Image (cartoon, rainbow, N blue to C red):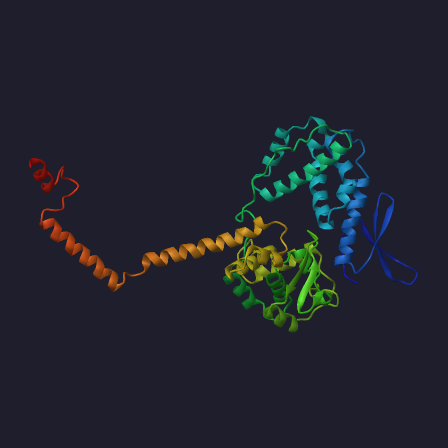
Length: 383
């Protein structure tokens, strides 16, 4: 059995000696199904975290405070309808806010300026600021619905859009080649690279891909973050890697003990494999998703074709790759025109025009810009 250390999760042996895992908090016992660390196990765990932990507010929590409004939202149907991974992220963000000094402040007195100051503390991390604003908006929506506050303090507040420079670093083809040189086909590391790169999917979806997702020479799955269903044709390179790699029964990627990866464990493990390949800091699993989108754009794919592979909900993110590739293509074409030597025919034409210009100048029919009048014009006036 895989070793696992998750808060509030405990194994209990039944009368047959078999371990069964439960989520225990505030007197509640929720059964966790599946192998510890597997996709179904982790989904159940995150679901239990979303349902159980918010049900036990801190003692002494002031009614109408920011912390109380957060607890109200975490126990709402709006929160429970979110995807497990999104619930886990918002739970972490909002718990930190509730336990801070601002948690005891009256939520009804919070103004947009207060939200702006809160977000300003995360100016160096625009993705984190955007996630905080999104979570706080959801809290305000429920608080208004429950008549806790009269107006939304997040209304009109915006966060600077994260740019590609502030997000996950994209892998270049040279980075990919260096990783492949360090980890040959047949290794788990090369299998992880192949799945991330040639599917263009997020880490959470890649670690749960398995034989059951293969249908008609494609990988069919429902994305965990957005719920989008995608069918991705299996790339020949990925097919070769899969054929030469040891895979698990339910997931292609497994840990040393044969259990499926949890998202956090996979991030740490893949990060070690990147460093072992002497690659620069900042390269992550998500950067390979970006690399796949870039390659699709370089191949001439439209934004909708790229979206069909990546599963992005918005086309704005996809357009970053196509615009970047198009800019490089146009710049290269422009420079080629500038550097292109003048053809002999064109040189002959230019030389002929220069010769005619000299003849006209000698005949007194052409004057320079420094002359106030031409000789012919003066003669015409005298007449």
